[in-house]
Image (cartoon, rainbow, N blue to C red; front, side, top):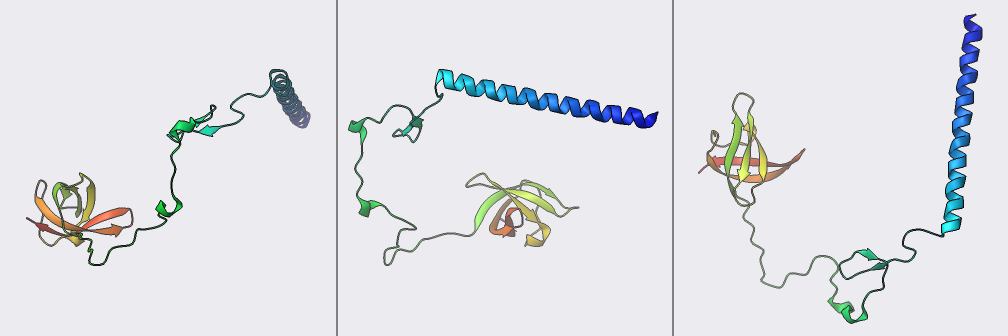
Length: 152
């Protein structure tokens, strides 16, 4: 008896699956027929306006801007002789959180308000929360890490 019940369930599932497939095909055919009747939908020909958005109206020729090919710079602009880019690797911040038992915390950069991870291995002086510190940044596994951290 269990065997006949099993085959009955299988045939019922197969019938449902076929019925679902037929309904899906009917809906697809109905959409195709509606599209033929109503014509195509959406923007058939798109233009890009002066803000970079796609629109269906052609751009105003009065707003056209001429650009010389020589003015287009590809890559990084060349540095002039004697021009030295000054970058101070030492940054200042405030310790927003530090857990001495776990040996890590976060420093809030005073310049750009970004939080940087700091590990006890990157400390020069002992730090605590709300201490003002100077530090350098180094690429870590999950982003930039504060290293060579000193109290100010």
